[in-house]
Length: 265
Image (cartoon, rainbow, N blue to C red):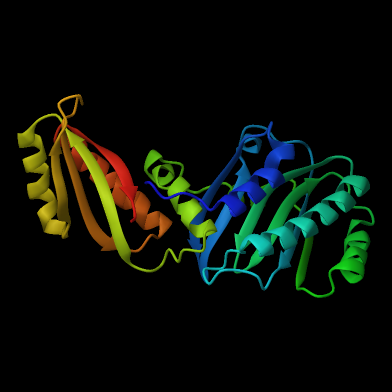
């Protein structure tokens, strides 16, 4: 788990979300019909929602993106300029509003708002598109959603297990950098065991699922001194990685050890 997010993309994300720092924002990726989608969601609205019954979904497509569908640094700047302009319209038109999520999918960035009033909002956003964003494909959806179905069904993750989120930081970083998560690649996995015999028992079990051993080490300063690194080639589909880490965690635990996550070279 040693891979780092590119500085330019990371800084752009920090600047964009800095005005919402008091909220509980989180990011994850999930596979959809045409590829991977990145979801940034404000988790706090799962606990309590304002009485805003209209959803406003706005979006812009950019040609400046990686092959995996994630906009590159220039594409993100383009989308954030668009988002700022639309946000200004929404805030001025409907004082009672909340930005609750951001979607990035197939070179398109979407912002998801819930607002109390929508009077003239469609006309104002359409005018913005015609005056400033005629060179791109833009999206605008305004619907009644008094029970916040879109937030619960699309933005909030279906899987909230520890195994799902154990991989999400790295998967999100890789996706933001343009890595194709659907391609097979060497994935390293790290374990620590209480005794050598525990490690040997674990190795016997994983032989049946085609893992290869990279290193066996001993660190006397560690409470679990018997270290193990193994690898296998797999795709990085988020749901698959959640299931794989769940299995590896369980196997390590049953052999008096623990799973310390995965990484790529």
